[in-house]
Length: 432
Image 1 (spheres, rainbow, N blue to C red):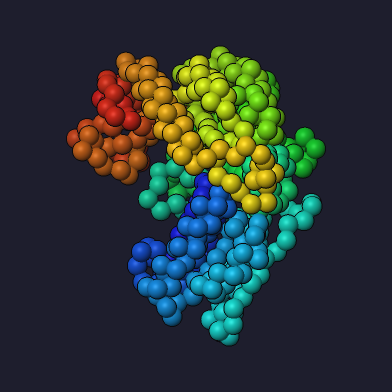
Image 2: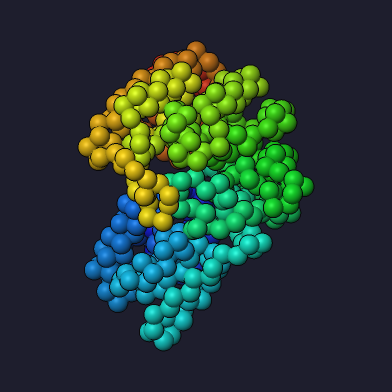
């Protein structure tokens, strides 16, 4: 039988889909593209925004029209957070949540045997354990993502994730070490540690286990040449964390520090746990500790109550920080959150104008950062991608670089002299 997987959302979702693909493959399924005919279609959903829910419904409808006799399974954050809404989607034959993913195959087999719809959503509980998962291969990738943390207890006013993902829980170090060793044996040179709220790693242990412990473990694995982190809540990084990360030669100095807004009044309404001044202080500490560190972030535009003045403060703040890259999103009303019922909702038209304005400003900031890289010699890990400008790879601080080479350098690490900027990347010449 053939199984197709379609993933919406974050790197954690992508990792979990990879685990599901492995489970199905190990049980005799051929894994095919979601755009081709399949006997089973699994959509791993995201529910951060209502548009994610819409994309989930559209994907299920498309698949069922093309494969009316096949099994369509819905899993992930959407049914976990909104089980009643998920149950009303007629195209979904099997519905499970974001917990106990290992049961998905069993539920699909049950549907195939009985023809009866299966709804199996396990509720999150206080004190639940990290669901054991181990990836061994990522198709067409040079780097491997490893989920080491799940759950969130921050309760930002716009976010449904605590409902969808449950309490904070962490992958035990022994399991992480085993997974890392397997990936190194498979030839992966870079690993990216990801989580729903990554700096909360080990919080449930009362401080006995922390994110820096996982970082140091990963850096100590033979064969792993680079260790990178996913998105970080900035205020959870301590001085000790920064010092110990800086002591690791394999650690990549690219920090995706979730900002959301550069205006203190907006941050307060968002129930973020830092001020602009505190955020800048953390950036300064990171830049002092790491040579050529890159700061990237997300900014939400048009949050309820955001005035023209607050938006202007946000733009200026982002320019002052000098991010390497900024992902700009319009605020999306998310049912079930406090922000959904806040007064002074910003109109769609205003959000579109502000998104465009901030994106233009941040493109200039991005180009300025790329120009600072010209003349440097950086280590680049080359990907499988071939472009008209050469083979593409990434520096340790995650700058895309393209190089013309006489031999196949994909999957290899090389020192590269960065000589110019072209669009959103740097052009380099092999220097080793």
